[in-house]
Each structure stands twice: as structure tokens, then as C-alpha cells.
Image (cartoon, rainbow, N blue to C red; front, side, top):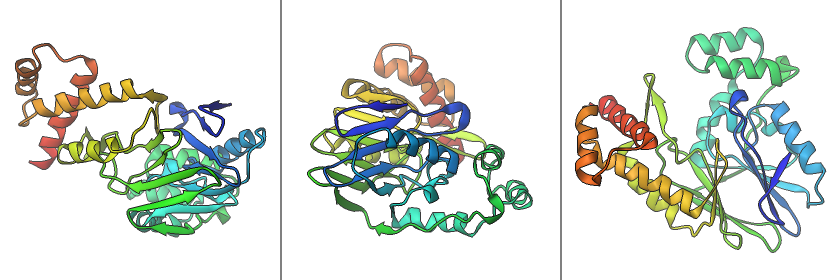
Length: 281
């Protein structure tokens, strides 16, 4: 069931147990725009069925927020122009070259080109896989592009990100709603989850220039401005405390600077920043 944010903005909630991110829908007077295409053809079909129950203009555009499989493998199901930034376009080319039969999937998993969960979901949720080929995007932009849906404008911009270098956000100015995809999350390198310290503050600056009352993150629910500001504050406080590969030093720094013990979220972030120090050492 779609969640309604306003008369023109809806979203389908994430499903963590099925590796499904939240999918967005913005409706203008003439056209509608979708944010992210889902992790499979089945995910996309379920989203489209929900949209059919609404009295909204036809979907003309699908924006892919970044080139991680769970955000684009459903794109073939949409009779619409797929929009990506140029970096996302280059990263998706590998997936366009893939075959999706069982033998090929096993090969990609063994070569670390695809994780086991991805292969399992493809097997379960993409039928007729022997003939499946991922389509190419239709509209490729550099840095930023504006899409007019008819009395409803969407601003698309590639931003700095601690999650993926090709991250795109979608901002709806008149509603003050921003779709962040996964850009505000960390990432995993060599089995270590980490936030990229060097990109944290530039990312926050990129995102906070948009006046957003509501933010939708790819694998969570809607955040209002107070909740989003708290998220940034906790990330920033944890980041400031980490100056080396020592978790204990970071905890001590946090207490010395903030004058209290870190909460559970901040402890998680501190460990992630320590992991970044380890990875970059």
C-alpha cells in the first residue's frame, strides 16, 4: 500500500527482509515521476499496481538514485524515460552486459560481482531470466537537471555521499520534500561497514542547501526536519570524536568534547568512522 505525503507525493515503504528500498512517486498536472525502480521486476510490478489504484497522470520518468542493484533491477517494467547521472550510467553498463540465467548468476557470485542475496532475489522475482537483459537509461545528465511534470518541478542533483559516489537526490521545491536514496548511509569495504569521513561534511552541506521539511531515505521511513537534523548532529558528533584507529580513544574524545556518553546511534557511527580510519590506513 502506498503512503501519501501530500496530494501529489506518495511512496512505497522499504522492505528490509526482501532487500527492497522505498520507492517514490511525484505527480504533476501532466506527468508523474518515480524515484528508483525497485530491486526486481516483481518489485516494480507491485509498485505499478499500487499506482494504478490512484487517479494520477501517467508515469513519464523514472529516476535512479545510484547504481546499486536494489534500486534499478526493476527498471525494465516502466514504460517511461529512465534518468541517471553520467556516473550512474557508466556503473550500470556492467549490469547491462550480464546474463541472468542460473549458471551466470553463480559465476558472478563466485567472482564477487554480485552478492548471494542479490542472486537469490533475481531467481525468485525476475521471471524468464534466460532472456532478461537490463535496458539502458534514456536521459543522462551532468550534475543537475530540472524536470517539469506540469505545475510541479523536480530538481535532480548529484551530491557528495558517504554511501556511493554517483548518488542523486530528488527535491520537490513547492512541497519541500527531498528523496535521498541511500546517499546519507555508509558503505561496506573489505567486510567493514564505514562512513567516509572525508565526504561527510561536504555531503551534509550539499543536502542541507535544500530547504526540506520531509526527507525520505532509501531504507527507512520519512524523517521530518527535526529528525533529519538530529541524524546529522549525531553523525557529526561521532565524526569529530574519531581521529585514529582506536575505538577507545574515540569514545574518550566524544565524552571530552560533548560532555556525555554517546548514545547507541553515536556508538554505531563512531565504530563506522573508526573502520574508515582502518580502511584508509
